[in-house]
Image (cartoon, rainbow, N blue to C red; front, side, top):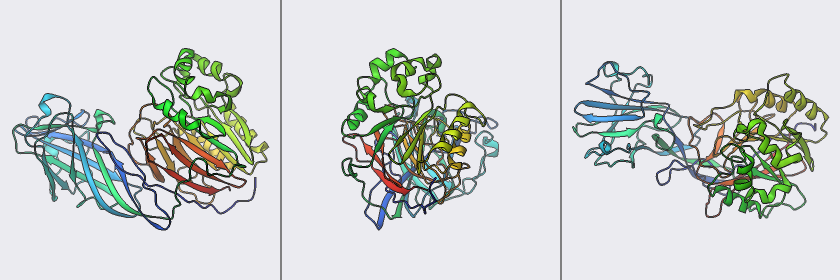
Length: 472
């Protein structure tokens, strides 16, 4: 490997906003140096309600937050805000009414802060509920079923930290809101706005990179009966270079029929230049036989699913998170030998399940740790994964997830290839950019001793995230 270089990054994008009735994030792009307005969406780390007609009952695992005056019901929510940089300029709490007739109410309730942040989601009852002792933040009038409502909570949410908010009502015709247990599509949201200083450069267009440097472009979680993969395949039509995939190439079961009916008409037209990786849905067919049959030798040795290749001065490794990755496993030993044999100064790796992710649907995969450790030991630059259906970029980190500006690997979750979006959960440390309302592809331009990344959005969308790093 080459001698270590000081790592620099020009990063566009911080996280932004909720739109319509679904959680979404959008990054505002600015020229350097300036202040880029941004918002970040958080979901609760805990929520529950209490009922004075059942004083010893806990409702923390239910999908509903009851608010009523008779019997008296009070709802409690707790959010942890982390990773927010710059000055907080506002915050809104958004809640969604349940999709049943009883959710209608002439009074949506009063929202108040409370000082306690240690109450238990699964232990709080009417008898031991926290005291609602903070300022009134807002009041909702009439609410209808299956709809979003928001309250300004900027008076209490002022930066990173943990915040508790209560909802109560004196109206005997109460309201019912969806809790975090109802699922990511309707869980409560805390949207924090910031004025974030950046030293960014505008995103480049897909045709402005030097033609002499190789391009690697792709995404994961791609094809089903929907149209998302049609939009992302159209992007590939205009981007030359090698195409990668980060798994779950086709849904739901990775059958040959699904590859032929869903993947082949869209991303399949780029098959000849594709270097894939498998995902768990590809393995829903025994041995991922549909995947290996469709891609043939391009997927590496059949049944193994890991291989490597070179692009310019870069060594690129496609790995398999659906088989053993443990220390001493065949895959981990192969990876270390492969990296030791490479003479290229820069290394990029991709596979399906992310070691680091803020996704609500799939937790960080600790099983991938030995692969991350091996790549770190050999000074790799980039890891790209999928599994959670959204886009996320992390600052360079060491294998334990701590920021590491000298040796750290920059991780991306690129699960926005076409399958339906997932929401974000607790935002993990060092997460720098997130989006879950825009299909797209993640493009890398691989220079001699550095790289550029660029999120290329589907037609009609404006989300962008781009930047660069030097190789180690």
